[in-house]
Structure formats: structure tokens, C-alpha cells
Image (cartoon, rainbow, N blue to C red; front, side, top):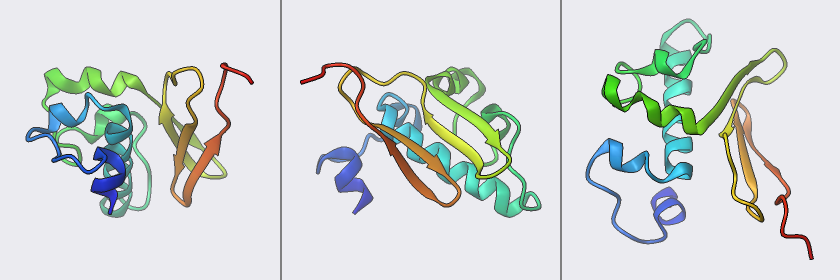
Length: 111
């Protein structure tokens, strides 16, 4: 089901770095990695997203720059908040937390 939502019914890219070119795909990949990190690292979250490479996120060190496209911060109440760093005008922003998905209204392009 997620494959249809994320890729729009198209075949997923063959390499991990190719996934990273699609911001939302990268967002959900990293969210899964953060959750695996917490599971195996004593129920704590990484300080930085690069802490996920390579053990929890299959990127090479030279591909770590893809993570700059995301906004990640630890949140004492929610655990963490993960979203795209830059959302296109008129696009809804997705914020991922350990407990689920939050949305923010589209910015710009008012009607």
C-alpha cells in the first residue's frame, strides 16, 4: 500500500540513493530508520540523522547530504519531529513523530 502512495503506482527506484531524490520517500525511509534505531538502542532517538548511517539507513557516507533535505529535532513531549526542510508553496507538509503523522496546511498559493 505505501508503495502505491509514495510512488504513485510506479516501480520503486532500484537504489537507495534514488529513493532519496523523492523527498517524501526519503522522509518515510528515514522515519523507519529512526524507529529501528530507537528499538535497538535502548528506546532513545538519534541526536542527528547521520547517526543512522550505515547501520539503520542504507546510505553511503557520501550520500549523507540527502539528509539535509529533512528537518529533524528531538522533542521532549513527542520524542522527535521529522519533516521536509523545504515544502513547495501550496504543498501540505507532513510531520512524522513516533506516534503518527501530523499535517500542516499548505503554504502560499492562497485562494
